[in-house]
Image 1 (cartoon, one colour):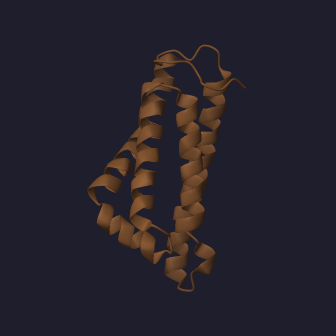
Image 2 (cartoon, one colour):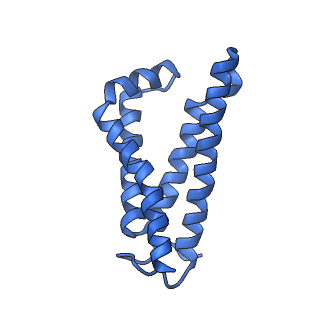
Length: 137
């Protein structure tokens, strides 16, 4: 079972680690996109969300306070869904559909991150982690 959980953690974390890398290697382009969505302090927001995705992804991957890392990911994902993918404001049908897909993806990943948070904070024997949980549910 420990190996299955580790594989799941690796697969989950890859998305956030590659996203964090993109936030740091394509900061200007991402900041321009964020600014077009009305995000205040767009460049700082891109860098900040990149840090949160990176820290959360590494935390889940390595099993270092993975409950906290999962919670960071959930908060960042929910914020991103609401701020960046406001499909309800789109008038173009294709744009609306694209934003709705991205919103729903972020919402589903938020749910998965919250489940991981509960899992890591509740299960006594996590196995194959560096630290135990920070929270105790």
